[in-house]
Image (cartoon, rainbow, N blue to C red; front, side):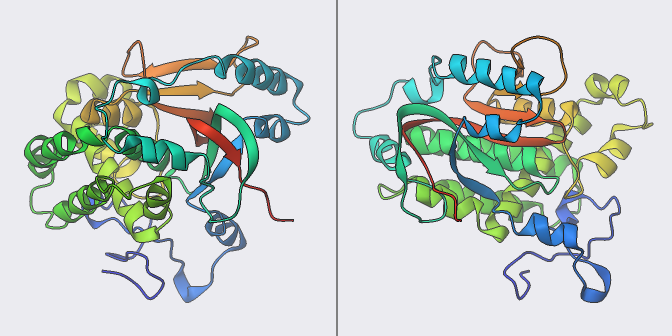
Length: 324
């Protein structure tokens, strides 16, 4: 199921509404030529290096309103605690090693420069239409890297609760289990005492593993929408059925996530996500929403129109130096 470049190639990418169980998880072009825009996207790491939140000020340079929001956000964010990091743990569960390693990780194996001790930071996610799913699932895996005693419980949920539901709405799709199996196998890697942030980065920057996890996330979102059509259909005005909506907007790779997909995926995993919106909404601070509605979230994302990046608390934050 892998091509010569190490990517997954279950089926040609025609841009059609093939279900996720038959989804093409590599970008391909007819005739073998790769457009310049696609080359630019594929030159980006799937999950980028650790960066200080100050990078937002550089990103928004020239936009006074967004720069002001970023300044307020950076100041307020560093005062906040991270519930997934500060939650109670069983002594000796191995999480401390992961925390210590976070201060060194940059995702590329390069030496890090000294940064702020215990700070919120961000990691850029490839702009390939899968950024929400990839960023969210990276957050799920990071949570379990820090809470290793919970991994077996979540894997049991996948096998005994989530996967049967996915099979229920994907009858005859023999490859469904492959995506779940890849996700479970990579979660199990985090149980090792030697597992670190580098382990997590290796998983999510490997095209095969990373895209299989993304497809599994799409399957979960699609399944929840199909099994709860009465909740979603009133908001899907451009489609006659939830099946039609999923076949165009959820199942295919490279299609961006909207609010229904976010609500559906978080409902399936039962892991809330906080999204910080940097857009043209009024106010001096970016708007924050938690999906599903909750007092706290274990996963945090930054949204800019059409794109999501990953926001997290690094116990000993360092920023990977950019190559000149």
